[in-house]
Amino acid sequence: MLRAQCPQDHRFRLRYVAEPARCGTCGDALPLEGTVVHEPSDVDTQVECDGCGTRTRVHLRPVASVAPGAGWTRAEASVVVGAHEEGRSVRGFVTGPVTAGLRVAFGGRVTGVLPTPLIDLSGRPDPPDFVGRPIEVRVVRYDLAWCEVVVDRRSILAEARTAGRERLLAALRLGDMLDGVVRGVAEYGAFVDVGGVDALLHVTEMGGVPVVPGERLRVEVTRLDAVSESVGVRRV
Image (cartoon, rainbow, N blue to C red; front, side, top):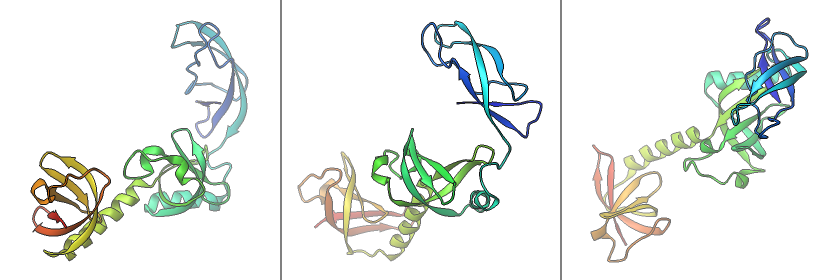
């Protein structure tokens, strides 16, 4: 489906079907996105293939002319606009995967796309694991004319992690026993996530047993630095 803008009336954007949509010489998809047309009617135009350079005559057939906000009720649109302007999170439901992300439904006809890099803090999630689950997200971009929404979950998780880190640092005391997970290993030691804080487990504090990423450990707090907000631990 091709989307084009009509310069005679900037309130409207047009949806077209391109025939053909591929180059007849090399078979590559023709670069149609963003093609400008001047009226909501059939259009013939010449398009040059990016692959082989052949110019192909393309017939554009309009299938819809969409005004801003069409397709959603005022109440549905207000959910999206309000959440974006206020920066608040909204609760949705993951209905399935899409190209490079997930489709999230928010009730009524409002759905959004959650790009894969914005699903979690790792940036490398497995999208199918989230299908069929409720999810808390923020609206980062929307287009009322096309009823399109892009949402983000990563920022919510990052804020929660930062808040948890601050609470933990304020509560930690020397000698505290904590459970943690090894996040990374270096020549001088390992970094252990003890609940939002990456504590340094020096090689001399490993008890002579090397650790690997993902390993769960019981550790004792041996060093606290309020200025650098760093924590040192030893294996117990």
